[in-house]
Image 1 (cartoon, rainbow, N blue to C red):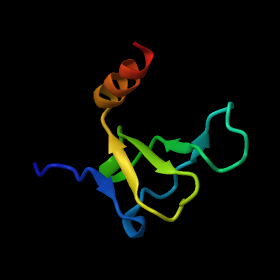
Image 2 (image 1 turned 120 degrees about the vertical axis):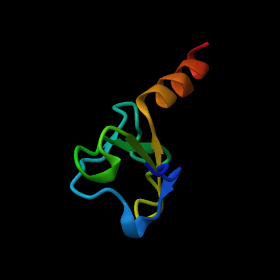
Image 3 (image 1 turned 60 degrees about the horizontal axis):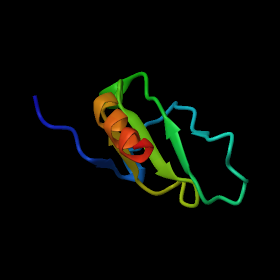
Image 4 (image 1 turned 180 degrees about the vertical axis):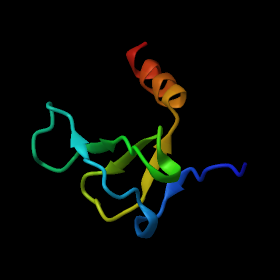
Length: 75
């Protein structure tokens, strides 16, 4: 099995996903958006993109990687 890319170019970004912003977002487009692809090669991964550049690339995280990333901010 080949390794998944660390990011997905906009031309191959996960489709048919619902991008979400934090309820704390002010609407100034200075946050990130997240999505959980349910099908295709990105199923089960968390996609993250810059709200200022929705056509730009999305970063992909495994559930374990995202948990470690967010735990680092909490501590």
